[in-house]
Length: 125
Image (cartoon, rainbow, N blue to C red; front, side, top):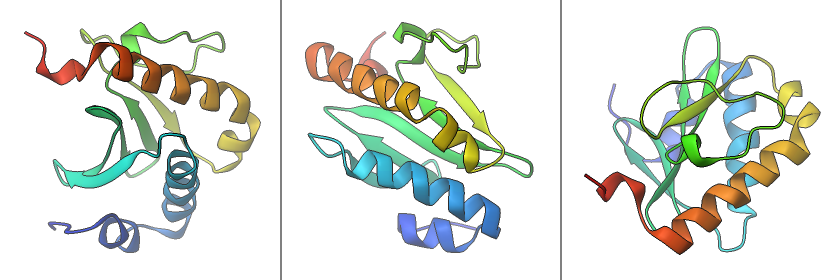
């Protein structure tokens, strides 16, 4: 299935996935500056001076991804991945967002700051 909007993407999900995606989306919409959302690679991608975050639902979890994840502070050890830049946080229950809200918020603002200072990491060689 191909999605035109983030709303289309959310509407296609199971209820538990919808709740997680809606909460993550709300976090990103209340940032300053606000993250700009779009569908890319058939998933929601959020830009702040370039690609900054993505959300991707899987059968048993939802990934909250950071394009600059390798550069982020991760005091709670939430980030997964081993690529050059990208990392993600697998979320299985919406309560995990609430339980880690301060850490997630700190990571969001750190990722945004890096993009604002250094530009879009996806344009690097």
